[in-house]
Image (cartoon, rainbow, N blue to C red):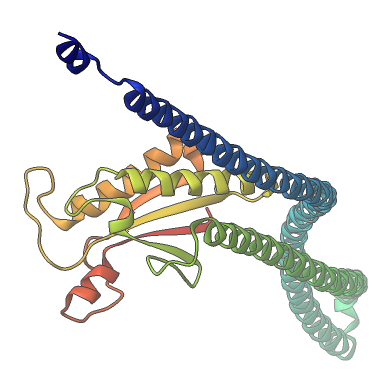
Length: 374
C-alpha cells in the first residue's frame, strides 16, 4: 500500500521552475523591446527637432526673400505705371500731331490750288495787257495817220485819243493787278515754305514718337521674356531635371507619356499631378506680370506619324487637339483664367525628329507650352 502511494506522488517543482523561467524570459523580452522602442523614438524625436530647426531657418530665409521680392515687385509696378503713362502720353501726342499734319496737308493743298488760280489769273492779266497794248499801238498809228490826213477828221482823232487814254488807264490798272497778284504769289510761296518746314518738324516728332513707341514695345516683349524665363526656371526646379521635360527655345516640352496613356486624351494620375504643379507655378508668376501685358499660355498638342483610327479619334488631328484641350481644361479647373489660355492641335505634321524609329516617335509625341503676347 505504501509503495503504491509513493508511486502516485508527483513532483511539481520542475514544471513550476520551467513556467517561472518562461515568465521571466518573456518579461525580459518585453522589457528589451520597450527599451529598444524608447531608444528609437528618442532618435526619431531628435531628428525631427533638428529638421524643425532647419525648417524654421528656411522659413526665416524665405520670409526675407519674400519681403525683398515684394519690394522689387512694388518698384516694378511703379516703373510699369510710369511707362504706361508715358506711352499713353506719347500715343496722344502722336495722334494730335497726325491730326495737325492732316490739317496742314489740307491747307497746303488749298494754298497750291490758290497759287495755281493766281498763276492763271496772272497769265490772263498779262494776255489782256498785251492785247490792250496792241490796241494802243494801233490807235497811236491811226492817230498819226489822222493828223497827216486832214483836219476834218480831228473829231475822230480826239475820240481815238480818248480811247488811247482809257486804254492806257486800263493798262496801268492791269499792271497794278499783276503786281498785287505777284505779291499774293510771294505770300503764298512763303506760306508754303513755312508749312513745309512745319511738316518736316512734325515728321521728325512723329518719327521720334514712333521710335519711343517701338522702344516701349520692345521693353514689354523683354519683360514678358523675363517672366517666361522665370516661369520655365521655376517649372524646371519643381519638376526636376528629367529627360521627359525639355526647354526648346521659348517653349517647355512635355513628352505625351508623362500626361496621357497611349492613344488616349484622358490625363493619367501622374499627368494630373504634373499639371497641378505647373498650375501652381503659373499662379505664382501671374501676379507679377503687369496688367498692361496681354499674355497668353499656348498649349500645343503633337503626335507621331503612325496613324490612329478609332471611334473617338478618327485621325491624329483629333487626338492632338483633344490632348491640348484636356490640358487647358485642367489648368482652368486649377484656377488659371480661361482668357490667358489657348489650345491647338498639330497632329503629326510638325515633327522634331523625322527618323523612322521608336525614339523619334517618342520625341514627336509631346505637349508644348509657350508664354507669349496676344
